[in-house]
Every structure is written in structure tokens, then in C-alpha cells.
Image 1 (cartoon, rainbow, N blue to C red):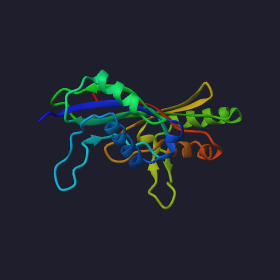
Image 2 (cartoon, rainbow, N blue to C red):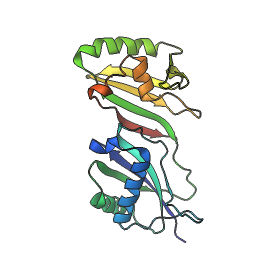
Image 3 (cartoon, helix red, strand yellow):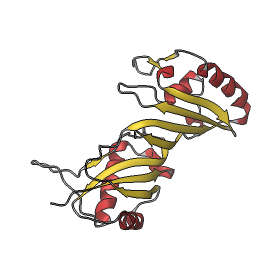
Image 4 (cartoon, one colour):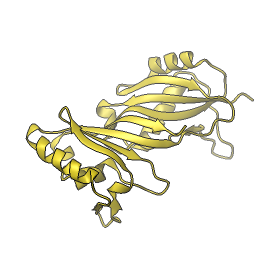
Amino acid sequence: MVRQRVRIRFRKAGDLRLIGHRDLVRTIERVLRRAELRLGMSEGFHPKPRMSFPSALALGIAGMEEVAEVELAEECPGSAILQRLSASTVPGLDFLRAEILPDGVKKAQIRSSTYQIELPPERLAEAEAKAAALRGAETFLVDRPRGGRAVDVCASLEHVGVQSGRLTIRLAALSRGGASPRDVLAALGLIDLERDGYCLTRTAVELQP
């Protein structure tokens, strides 16, 4: 039985950023079937395609270089997979690369994620001052809405700063929880930006070696 694992890099942008992770998974599954790629299926009474996403993208956040891993029940070159996916996709979902994984390679694990958001010109100076203070802090607790447990944004914050009118946030992936980019926005007093129409974008996903 043929089992070929493929690591796919893709972009989720435009109106597609407004769908949740489960809907994204279903959309990618439909694109794979439309591309006439034979999917490897799980066993049992309700077989499902063997697909994995090392880091779900939160609702409302665009992703410029997301990661998915898919098992195929056929052998197909990466270039052909990419071509077939690109010809079968939907608006807002762009396939960038398709890499055939050798046998024995573990599932992808996130090392860090980088996010950006454009800032209003009148808030640049204040945002940079608060970002500098956060960079120098050892701990900074942020209360999550709806009674959620407070999170220390400094525990996973690798970088935060303002450049060329944009705020950049890089977060390490922790084994147990960790801050989200929206937690960092809250720590900087910028949580209102998304309500005003500014869009968070995950610009990079770095994997563990």
C-alpha cells in the first residue's frame, strides 16, 4: 500500500481569513479531492483523510506561509501536486510549495510564529514605547476575556517591535499553552485595532529542525 507524506505550504488570505480552522480543513480536503489526489485514510468505521496542521490559525488572522501535512495513497512528484492544487483551489487559498517527506520524518512541530499588524500613524510612538518596555520586562500578565486564566506574555515572547509602520510579534511555541498575538496586543494597549479594521497576519511559521 502506497503511503506518501507531503508537507504543503499555503497562504490563507482575503475573505478566507474569516473562516475557522475546521472550515479551513474541510476546504483543503475538498481542494485535494478536486485535484484528484488519492488521500490516505484512517482506519475504523468512519475513515478520515490523514491530514495534520501543526498550528491552527485563529479566526480572523491571515496566514502567509501556513503548514499542512497530508498522506497520499499514490506517488506523485511535489511539482505535480503543487500544479494540481493550484489549478483546483478557491479564492484566498494559494498553494506555495509541496515537499515529499522521506520515510521516518516526524510530524511538523512549530518552533515559532511571527505576526504583523499595521498601526495608525498617530499610535506609532506610543506602540514603540510600550513594545520597548515589554521587551525589557521579565513577566507581564494579561487577563483573557470571559474569565480565562491570565497568561504571561513574556514566557513565549521572542520579539516585539515597530518598524515601517507595522508591529511585529514573534512567539515561541510552548509545550503547555503560551501567549497568542492578541494577548500581546492587549499588553500593548492595542487590542482595539482589529475592531477598527486592522488585520493581524501570520507572516512566518518556523518549524523545529
